[in-house]
Length: 88
Image 1 (tube, rainbow, N blue to C red):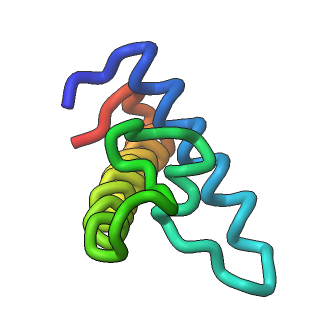
Image 2 (image 1 turned 180 degrees about the vertical axis):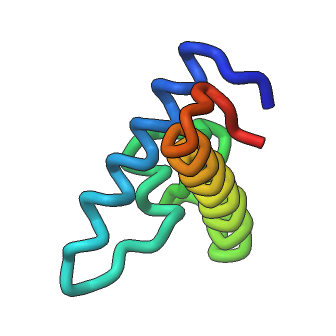
């Protein structure tokens, strides 16, 4: 993906939110991290939806968070090598 200011901010936001949850005794699922940030509005769960629909939405949200985390880890790796911003 192209590295833009918006993308850098969003990636940092997701990474920071994820890192805050890692110290908790009960592990917070990735989809919940995304929901707390309202990362993908169309993938927000709701009590009005069926369990199957919520399951699919959680999968979308979790996959999106995972993608952001993977990109953040790559950016950190490249920054340590003196190459910033770079994610691939």
